Length: 181
Image (cartoon, rainbow, N blue to C red; front, side, top):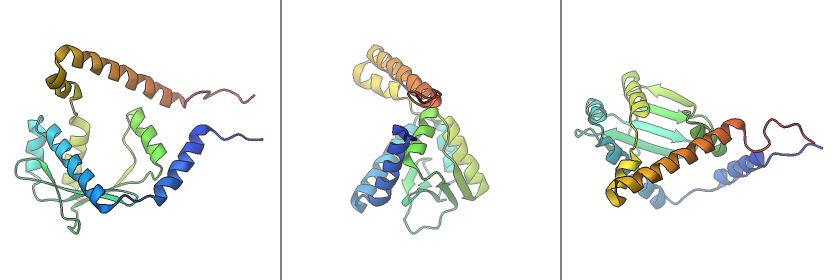
């Protein structure tokens, strides 16, 4: 008798649950607004990223996964704003992996998800540069709240936990590679 891994069972449940749940529009809008605020916070710490975005002012990038969509447009300040939902995108980025569990595994490994790219090649290159080069310095933000030493200690602990989690995911979880009894 074949046994099912708890990971594959969880992935199947997440797939079914994700297919049936739709958050209300007001919640989606609020989450998108908060995401734009966070992205702009990170961008404001990277002058080169802002310069690159300024050159793409007014273009529209649509990112989508399953039924979720986010449309962003660079501003004259080199930041991002939500684009109108009916705006025609200059660049369409579609995450092709449908399973939220598989996406989480990809993220935990530190890999990029599989994406189909359609549209403006120059804009796609700039978005790729941003993804590859812009990082949030959470430790720096935390140090403003609690001081340098405690922030560094928490940052180190978080990095070690993330490293352990990545190793766990790469190995396939508990019991991976063992022969069934």
